[in-house]
Length: 135
Image 1 (cartoon, rainbow, N blue to C red):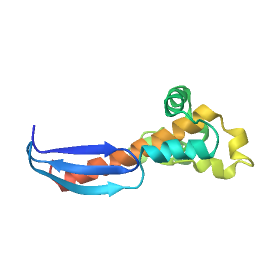
Image 2: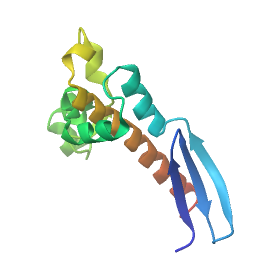
Image 3: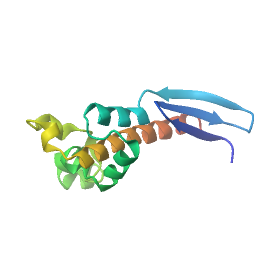
Image 4: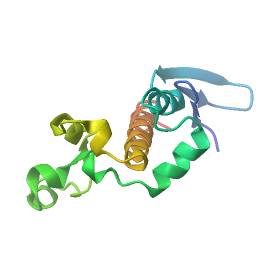
């Protein structure tokens, strides 16, 4: 079971190496955590309740908000770059072309895009840290 990487996702994210029940070491941290998700949705007056925000994200579709590999390369991205067409290339990139992003994007879709951004960031950091720590 040991060693393993413990990821605590709260206001930010903390990455802790656990070598035994009594031996731990904080490896890194990130300012992007669950409070980013909740805070931005509250600032936009989309969701004030985190549970409703998560449920909204489950029903949301972020394809009109996030730019995917397929949006950039079409089907060539999967064959030449070995990347799936639906892989996110840039979070919220499609909002930069909207005249009024808040008016054009649905609340559940924004919630989904934001939750995906926080989750992907945390998972990418977790993966890199685990590789560096040889976990």
